[in-house]
Image 1 (cartoon, rainbow, N blue to C red):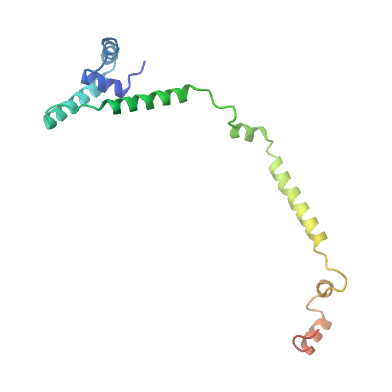
Image 2 (cartoon, rainbow, N blue to C red):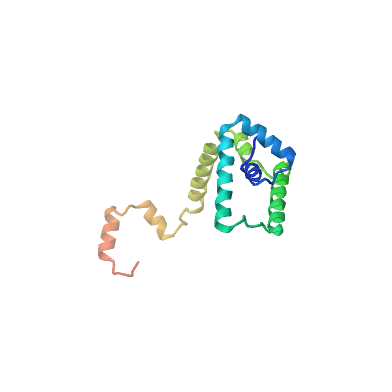
Length: 152
């Protein structure tokens, strides 16, 4: 079993139950890095004692709040995922890769076809004359040069 830093700090502070302290001591005998951490925590406790005389007491309300948060987090991690959650990664994997380009091509063809059908010039509309004759047509050039501005 892995020993957390919180357990090591509590061990260094002498705040573990005898059973938990025995478990930490077994882990310390096997892992030198854990022993170094405990020594570091014990040194920091000594520094606090030197600075403040004694280690400041932790308010019971704070201890209760931290325990409640830890329990809520543990419950959240242990709970099965909600049934209304959609796994988008799984959905993305279930769609064949060829469908996106095919859909884009179909949208393009549909857009061009509908655009051409909906925006055809009506008979007698000036846009129809421009669509038939190009601006380089000699008749258009002459008309543009001889008709007064604002006239048809």
